[in-house]
Image (cartoon, rainbow, N blue to C red; front, side, top):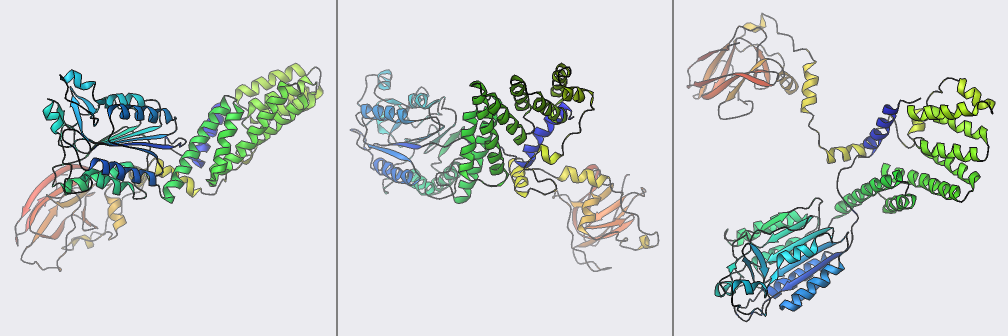
Length: 573
């Protein structure tokens, strides 16, 4: 019998060993983009905004987006296209909105200016002639999987000046979750339309970066920011705000695609296991079949195929039981239990099916298996059922009086696991998902190893000290024991000193004599471990003499050594 806590822990642990994955990847849907470019303003027309929209239309089409390009949009045209755009979006889709044209802010709220904008009577009236970015954000919320909003609307803006409005855009208010918002320059700043070029500095750089394979959206924006800042001598720096939880690529490479396939499949497996717990067999099978069709290979593929067979038996058993075909149901439940030795509930359902048909012998056989493989709670339930059957069946009576059967071999409990064979792929996934710093473990291991033995007393009298070990490994090991380090005061790591020839000093050389009464103290110098007292040939300059114990500095002395002048230091402990 397996203890219930041990059994539950083992069942939770093994999938983590065989298939560890961390991420929030979900099933991908369509990519939709609405692209607006406004040039033809009555007052203060632009020359590049339509070109920018066309450049983005091409770049996004090449990236797999289904685009809608609108040039010189009036307020009515802008609103109707935004509404149609929002209605297309599904919960697995990616939504992209790009705008090139004039924009303003009113009381911290951002507005896009349609080409038919006319001078209003007041700032309040202006709001009803503009298109609110906040309205766009509200429409995107809870519609798409992710939203990308890019506004090249920070251009120098005479329209704003003429109507007592504020040019440039404000920090966005309440963008949707899972969104990436980009401005062509920082909030409250304006940018030139690049009158000598075909496109704005921002959109020209952005379209180029989007076309590059294997870049995340963060890398695309970072590269664009660097290009624009360079092209404008720092006068314009694109700005971004992100709440994305998952990585997004405009053009995933083969490696990106494989990573995405593995990520999606891992998420589908999580979904399948949740549906299994709820006994939603059709939904669980749908997710498992998606994994198998994805052909991710490895342990995940094998696990999906095994789970598919189990789920088919559970679905068939449930259907047979519901329609009263108890022989078929019992057979299917028992088959499911063989496929998943932890499916104790399937075994009990099989017992019930056999008992409905008054077939006690196969029911007792399953109860015996439950006693062997089940938790403490399941075993107690099985024993209670056997006690009720012992008066009518000798096999049940024998099972009640028998000792608890031995649990099956671990290979039986975890079919498909390769015990004793390292799963390198799973190891890589573990480290990718949760990088491990081995330094603490190595330090603990090193602390269990005795310190190196002291050199002989005779050898210790040498002017340079006797070298205990000249290997880098020994130097690393000594860092975990009581020792002295000689380091330059301007550095934070161990000093690497070029040793001069024995007994000679160059014009910038000096002799450092280190003494101390503690027999445990050793000096770590130039990768060598030496015993006190020791004379070191060093370059003139400022140094720290650090006493280190268990990897921590417990005492520090500073010393400045003049060229050609011997210097003596006594260690305090």
